[in-house]
Length: 626
Image (tube, rainbow, N blue to C red):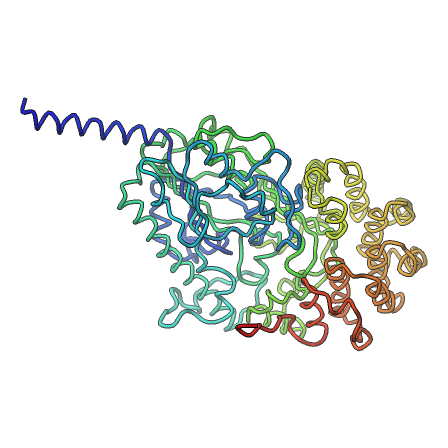
């Protein structure tokens, strides 16, 4: 044999061996868009979704997950769940955005850390938006910036790369389409959700958002092309998902199906198809959650899954299709969104969804400066105030029932509440008990007011929750008195209002507001609490009841409480009640607060002060150089 030919053959064999050795583990890429639920994709909504050819091409050689759920309906809470593998209310990371960062559970790292330790190159371009401490990010990424790329790894090094796309972010609906762009669909042909008014503006915003998704698909195509050019497609799993649902009004920010159900498509590389439990090109019905993503990536990479996370893998070694398709539950949560407070927990089980509105008087459409930068949001509120909406459309601006039950198979946008239908009593009880078990077992630190949680926990949410598991269980039980007839609940409410534990009194007062005028037998107790309770937030919730029921003027109680407070987090929570009462028709004379120290606090307080003073709550932009 010619020596030169022999050398070339040997060289080729060595190169092939090196390539094989370098690919003893798969690469993993995430293509993540923002704020877009599964509704907007033709893959999920063949008649009214937009064509996304690059995502659809990934699906042809991959898996489509029919029931994929973000755990939170807003960026930072959703992304904190993903990076930690922990449900947000377990750690205190469920608020958007953090006012004070919280800690990862003891002994647990953000999951890319474990990939790096196993030899993977980890890169993120570029959004993080985690609610965790900066120290928790050490050792997580080789590179996290607008310049991060899988192409910067060492030759032959396996990689995990996240590419974020902002094209579909909510802010893109504040104005019009980029100059020169035309609608991908005719506004006259869009299918409106039943809770939205049929107006020219809403139709145009639907068409605009569908168009933005088509544009995002083209942007994702450029990353897919890089992988193709580098010869990586046979060894790289490519995940595409939206970071939560949305983004037309009533989606993003709300723990409803439209705010939580997302697209999830995973391209399966030829060389690693043995790691998935279904044939390429098929669809999976089993429910998967964002809390499962960390375990799934680690399992695909052959890295041990740490015991401290809540998720479980839906791909990789040991995952069977029969077991995967039996998964039928998803858990979601919504709490503070910027300056707006609420507390909702969501449970999907089988074809039913269940909403637990722990503060049902705190209606969904309560003002939030960022929400109402969207023109469609403003129009919706104007039409509600003018009385020009039907029952389904106006529900967003009215108090809710403490629990709501929906059949997603016939009612995907959750309009018809079945909770009071005797035919669904057994299903309602099943989901109620399942959610009670979930929040108690985490345990859910959201049952503490945010300022109380931060001051008592020092941001060590997981540890704090375990230490206070019995207290949290008691708070859940007090809150769930809302679900029983008032005569049966009355004695236990009385006990809560007289408890030595401020958090029990706090939830006792909230439960009274949930019952409304039925709870008037407690009006004297609540007036006393509003005036004298040593805990300012108990006083706030008692004043809230007084205002909502018209039992007395709540404003003096609230302003007296604010005058004693110098914590911007606590002040913002009190102001949430002030805004609720003002938007419910109670006159709030802000001139009485002029010059008060609490009006000068920072954080989120200026947004509420600005709104109460007649503005939108948006802060003036700082001039450059100042």
